[in-house]
Amino acid sequence: MSTTTLRINPTGPSGTFVAKIEKISGQKLLACYQCGKCSAGCPMAAYMDILPNQIIRMAQLGMQKQLLASRTIWTCVSCLTCNSRCPKDIRIAEVIESLRETALRNGLRDDRLNIWEISPEARADLPPIATISAMRKLTS
Amino acid sequence: MTKLIYYPGCTLKNAARNFDVSTVSSMAKLDVEVEELDRWNCCGTVHALGSENIMNRVAPVTNLIRVKETAAKTEGMANEFMTSCAMCYNTLKRANIDVQNRPDKLEVINDFLNLETTKYEGDVEVRHLLEYLRDRVGFDRLAEKVTKPLKGLRVACYYGCLLVRPKEVAFDDVENPMIMENLIEALGATPVNFPLKTECCGAYHAVGKPEIIADRTDKILGSANDENIDLVVVSCPMCAYNLDFRQDDAKQLNPDLKNTPVLYFTQLMAMALECGDEALRFDLHHIDPLPALSARGLA
Ligand code: SF4
Ligand code: SF4
Image (cartoon, rainbow over all chains, first blue to last red; front, side, top):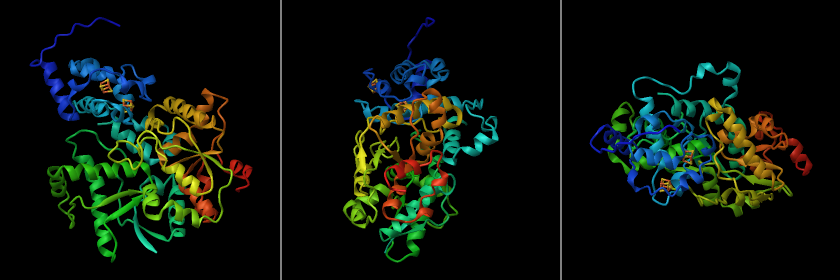
């Protein structure tokens, strides 16, 4: 892992980012005390590059670039296991969704799924419930 | 006959017609006449988690308006409806709770839907079929109606996410729900416990990340098969698709994975209540349930 210099300044751009994530998600990020329970029970953790508890920590610190570039925000499926187990009642899935929404709504239309790239046979095999939910979560 | 409004949802009219027909025909045997909701639309499938999201509440709220309209047309019909799809239940229930708690959002949605003649006022009850069976029909009464007990059938009940999370919508224990096991027992079968019954199947990653689904399916079915089961029952067409239709992918990862039929709980009800083969639609499954059922003398 490369080294990163962190400058924490609540009034700078990272502070604006933290405020935005807290507003969209409706969560108080500083409530997290890094117990790790969210990551311990996450069924998608094996396929993530940054674990859910690390996402919360990085969000507290306003690490916008790293968060928006992470694979994790596209891997979390909002199963809500973390939410229902967090001893501080933080809704981690809401925080991750707010990161996903930030990435999808930055005007670049950086969609993570192009339904036309899936073969017609594979598309026909998928039930509507799968295609509709995937498009809702992964496209702007 | 009790009358009850029924919301099938898109997938039950499409890939999961077996879920739809088995729901309707078994309810008739339990003296509940289900009436399909007039002019229903897609629920949106997933609840948007943004605290200020209003747009994604419009589709669920439109359905809740239709429930009020359908109920108003029939004498003595309550402002409530039932759905058997876990995903529709979850999305509709959470949208309902959200607008009940946030009158300001509801006002914006009602204004947006200004061509509707009925206003939504948070006054509809969303029920899942399992909840309705437990609380209104009663598992005792269900057991009395069973004409063909599913003796000897070992069943793993897979809940996935949507029946138990978040806790606001859960109608049973969040970590260890037992409602499906209790239902299976009422049908004369043997429910078995397995540790991964509320672990996510990977859901919509079926579309873009099939490798995740293969791995999840292998883990979940492997854990259920450790208990020497005949089949798995579910209440969600997304889970059913991943666990049933992606079993070949899972077998690529783990050739030892046993062929495991995945049924809707309503199909077992339809069997035990002898609703006839057309209520089962086993032709819509990937892994044929018949060998497992005939091994127990049930097909
Ligand atoms: S479970 Fe809650 S408190 Fe613990 S690390 Fe995760 S978010 Fe923080
Ligand atoms: S909601 Fe996302 S982060 Fe939380 S447990 Fe589920 S997949 Fe993991």
